[in-house]
Length: 135
Image 1: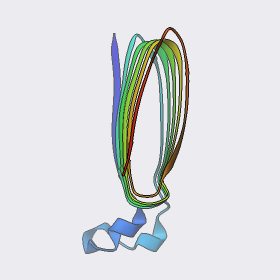
Image 2: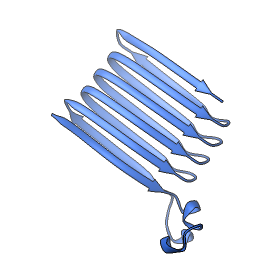
Image 3: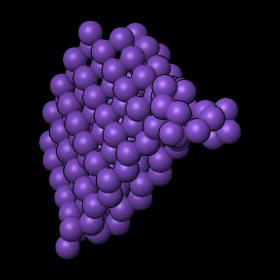
């Protein structure tokens, strides 16, 4: 069984450039919460703007996450519990944070951060592969 989610969000800082989206002061910063508990979990998330928060929890056998944020002061919190955990995270901007926990058999993380950003990674299991690129 395949479970998936696709979310796209814009924070109010980007709305100011588009008069069709309305007054940015009337809407909060986007926060995304994805929880998946199936056999083959897929989370695909893109967020644009400033101050966005993404919290993803995947529990199952084949957890896949592809996450991207563009803007400043964004945060990703990813937890994967299961047999096959794989995550690709890309963050563009300043003061972004990524926190990833993978608990399972085969853990793979690819993290790319452009700008002055930070991360914390925890992996427990028989497989552990981490690639971090910071520019």
